[in-house]
Image (cartoon, rainbow, N blue to C red; front, side, top):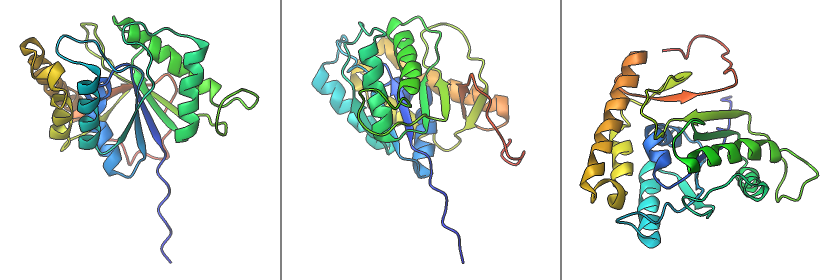
Length: 233
């Protein structure tokens, strides 16, 4: 008798603005989606205003990017450029963690030049803790995401020093397509078109670090356990 395949853990990928998740780990999102994970992208802000965008257009672009990656998307709705680390924000994100039953959470790396990025990461770090509390005014049942990883979508001019990289060979085009879905951010403004080239180059560079064609880097503050060495590249 064939045993049923184990359920894949639900994943929450949080971005300060629509396009951060795609830039930082779009290929990994597509790969994990294809593997059967239920993935929710949570945008803390709508990313607007920008020089060429508006809320309606940005929403349409972000929906298209999520479709390309094969995942769902939700907007929390905090104000772009004015995100602050508050108890109310923690509670809101903790509610999403509970609702999605997220067992794995990805957030931007905690060192960044953008205040929204730093604030969002701190909010989600605390929301992870709040989501497990039993006597607190939050919807849903308590849950504590077991794994908490950081992706790189930083505004600092430095090269990431990751804890691990995920082989995303074969998912390069899905990542690129999800990024250029944001036409107001990476197609219309000529000066931003080079960002797509940087991202593609980073895939190749981090792939070279683990001996694959392409890879995306991640950081963890907690150890990742292995049952054996079979999954090592």
